[in-house]
Image (cartoon, rainbow, N blue to C red; front, top):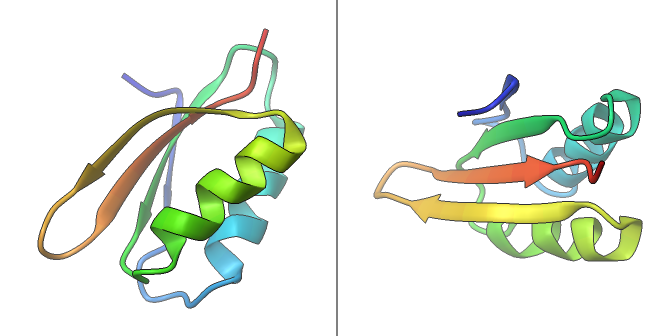
Length: 75
């Protein structure tokens, strides 16, 4: 279960990573954000951004239409 959902389908990288970083940066510690993206590079770029910024990738769920990335701002 997430605290917030960002629907970034239709956006091309690097926008999903940038918007995810902005949402995580303003979120309270411990907040979980679900990011929906359909750009194939988002499943690489967003986790890479999280690793560099100190955010956590909780889960990545792929289906035919999009990827769901469950991200967390550490407590």
